[in-house]
Image (cartoon, rainbow, N blue to C red; front, side, top):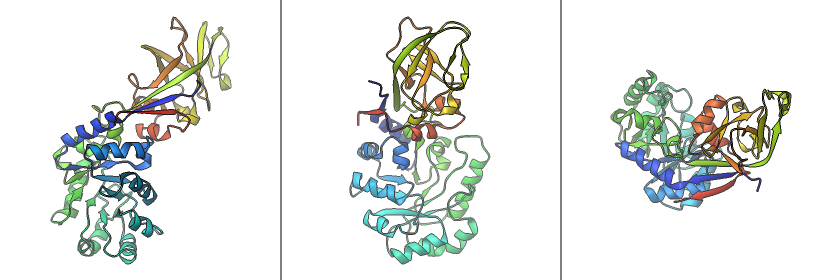
Length: 345
């Protein structure tokens, strides 16, 4: 079989949620946007709901509609993008809670769906989504008259515990929300780890559920094993792959494995990347191509049948460092060609 196998540990996702929930002093939701960070929200969200998560967050209304079909009535589903033009029927029919980001969204929502639940998103300094201080001051009384389910903001630098932006944003959020008769939320995964000052009434972990930093104690969730298609001996002076970017300096045994950038193995990680054959670390040689990767297996006594790219030895953040990116991109880039196997749950 030439199809790589992606194993996803649902019990590890639940374990990570419970571990973060234990550290959190308020209630703990779950972020399952981007199809649960590429791992299939239809498989992930139900196990989190059974574990006790009662509120879920998605990026856009269409994600919320799909999630409602999976979860059924009961759990609250909040939409980060708020109430966009054309969303009214989606929000109403799927019983979604838009996190309103502006005066325009507030007007659109109360006109189209009077009495429908809503939340508020405030900008505490990230300058991405949410009402700014002056906008909120003008709208605060009107907004609170709608009895929002949640008032939230988002930390820009929570993955850096000592960053000055964290206390600045926390202070700004308190100034904007102290005295409100509504639950508040500031923390995602990193905010939970910053401690109780950041927890408020609800936290919204995302990446930590799926085994990524900054939750260093997270259980690994994804395991990626890639089959070996062919093994050959390469003589000194011969090159491997496109562009002659790697040339053998000594006799080298090279395995060609069945994955590439079409499967989300980012091309940029090539010069630094390694795989594991059992306990032996094997360097990737030359460029990562669309469907194939060359690997140095000279140190092995026998050619391997498969190699590990993600799993016990290497995390999503290991791969991200090689590519100069973050674990989020590694997860959400994982392609559709893998044979996906789900365990636990």
